[in-house]
Length: 277
Image (tube, rainbow, N blue to C red; front, side, top):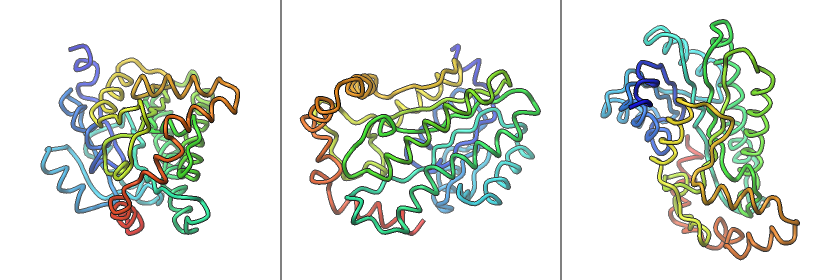
């Protein structure tokens, strides 16, 4: 009930909102009374999702294109009013050994996962700072606090998001604009299709991430890790001597999860969509 009171009426923008964590978050926040605007590079899917759930605004959004992003935020503010919360959720996660990763795909990962977040924050700040308020939530990953074979470029992108978000939190301290990172473990979405979760670590459900975001809006803090168990293990292993931490990671199966234990057909279908986006 408290969450609904504090979220009701807020204008919330979610990138990558047509499916997965973005759509689950939009749905959860709508149920709590927020006004929802979702953008996604997949124009067909964002229209289907937006229409089916009756979101206030939905449309095509390319987070790597300043004109597209700025135009989308302008439309939100014309239609719904000043943006209270921006959730930078759009991201891709191709898997495989770095040596086999095509250069265009490397650039695509960094463009969406890093530049898209930087651009979104910059454009939102220009709107929020003059008003003295707002909240930017960046969907990072526990991969941003660890190192996982098969995800070298993705890991790099999420380390970047965490460092960037923490820096903005200090840079704009006292302005009224808040910054938060959400660090999910492997989640049961298309992004994680074909990947087997490491031992002892169940995959999260997108609704769990959505619940964490809702709680952040009500009570802002710098970071939240989902699931709690995966977050604790990631933090604990990071404190250990390198050889011991790496050994525990291998014992849990992190060295195989994104390489040997991947369902090749499911990953191929996902990565073909990513390349075509």
